[in-house]
Length: 291
Image (cartoon, rainbow, N blue to C red; front, side, top):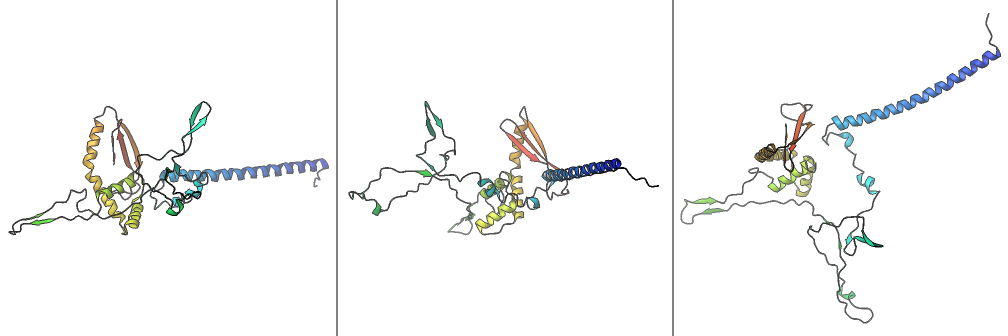
C-alpha cells in the first residue's frame, strides 16, 4: 500500500528541496570563484617561474617580445615633454620673509660642451617704425636644449712609411705601427671599448650592436666576430684582473657575492649546467670573475 504524504509532509519536502537548491547554487558560485582564484594563482606562479628559470636571451624569450613596445604611450601619458630652459628663469620663488627653491627639472650640466647659435633679425627689420633709426643690439635672451651627436663610424687608415737608402740597396726600413690589443684586428681599441661597455654596462646584446654598426657603417658585421673580439680582449686584460684580485685579497675585509648563471654553448657542458659568477670587493676597490 502506497503512503500518500500529508499536506504538512509535502510542505516540509518542498522546503527541504528549496534549501538544497539554494545550497547547491551557493556551492556552485563558490566553486566558480575558487576556480578563478586558482587560475589567477597559476598564472602568477608561471610568471615567477619564467622570471627564475626562463632563458635570459632576448632572441629566445618569446613572451618578452612586445613587453616594452608601448613604453612611450604608457609612460608619456602621465607627463609632458621637457621644456627648454631659459636663463631668465629663476630657481627661487619669493615668499614672505624668505626665498624658497623651485621644484622641477634640474639645470643642464655646465660642464657639457656648448654650441652657440645666434638668431638675428634681418637687416630690413632692424629699423624703428617710429623715427626710422637703426636698432642697436642691447642684449640676448638665451635658452638651452640638450642635443646628442649619434654614433659616427669611421675608418682609421694606417700607412706605414717605407725608407730606403738612395745610394745602395742594403738598407730598407719600415715605420712601426703602435701595439694593438688584437694584432691585425678589424676593430680599433675605441670600438672594442664601445662594444664591451655597451654589452656589460648598458646590457645591449651583440646582435643589436651588430645591427647598429651595420646601419651606421654600411657593412654587415658578424655577431660571432664581435664575440671573438670580446673574448680576445678579456684574455688580454687578464693580467690587470689578476693584479686587481691580488689587491683585493690583501685587504683586511673582503665582501663577496656568488650568483648562479646560465652560460649558453659552454664548451664541454650542457646548456642546463649551472655556472657561477663571483664578485669580490673592499671599500673602494674590487675585482670579479666567473667560473
